Length: 429
Figure 1 (cartoon, rainbow, N blue to C red):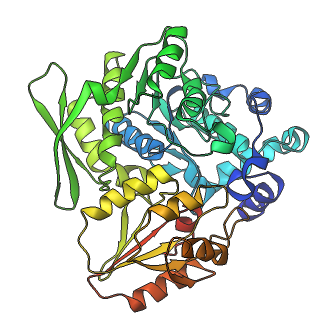
Figure 2 (tube, rainbow, N blue to C red):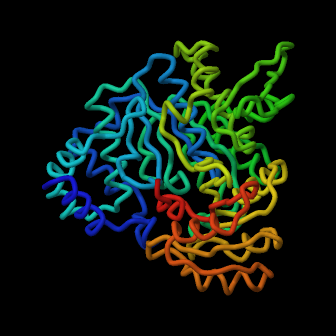
């Protein structure tokens, strides 16, 4: 098959969570283990950093990969979902898996795919393990898909586990309380393996501590071990000063991921890097500094408070749940602009009502939807928005919405695109 034929086969044959929601989830490890068995269990041939969390796990994964790559390690990176091309999910040293490798992988597993009937996610996870093993990666950063305990990525034995934070998202699958969701995320904690928790929280600390004790694992709460003493914007970079406990000197980092919510994400990255250093990984401070300053360039990360145009300034962000949107609103409070234009699209299984209740009423809205079955039709989103006194027009395509917003905006206005990873993925250019 050609690459186009192969991707058509994958998308048509395999159930995708991004398209159909929870119906695509395959509970348990039966399928992923069967696929990996056929491949010679490639998941056992690499070292890993395993990352879970409600928000920030994508950014943390990319920052970790950038640091490891800068330190000279051949570094794999598996993340999800993708924005435009599924090859974005699987990278080595910032380079996406080749079309030829993807085609070959599906070709050699086609019989098993027809028999096992795995999900799209299970196939991409197996593909990542196989790719990293075949290309001799020294270490790979693996982002969980959903939850952690039963996630297909959770068949690895990592060097370290990282849980960024816990928020209310995917409640219909993971649980309706922070403690229930934390229990699912804590499932990535492995026996004798250190776990770094990005944010301590009264409702979740006990859950993590119990899992750590049960697994004889050291637990580090990054926001207790490290403290941000100052931050500001310098030359279009986010400059953050961090103090470590029992140390007088502060260290300063410049991030090319400039959303101020990255301040929270920075702490578990630094804490995890320190653990790896203690385990013998040759990572110097200069590698950390350089990796963080060029993480976007090194790893190809997009959609995190990303400016895609100026005059008017257009920013897109993948924030899509209440916690993520709150962080976005916090960023807006320190952003200078004249009028605010919001291009918004969401999926049906998110807490749409909660998100809409949080949004500013003085913005001009342009309601749209991604072209996936999970997307909430723009007309339905507009009706729900009206209940919160949010007014705007409906657009079938996000790029039409952006063009209209640009035509309505003053050069000093701000156009903000968010609400769905899939909406951001359909932004052209």
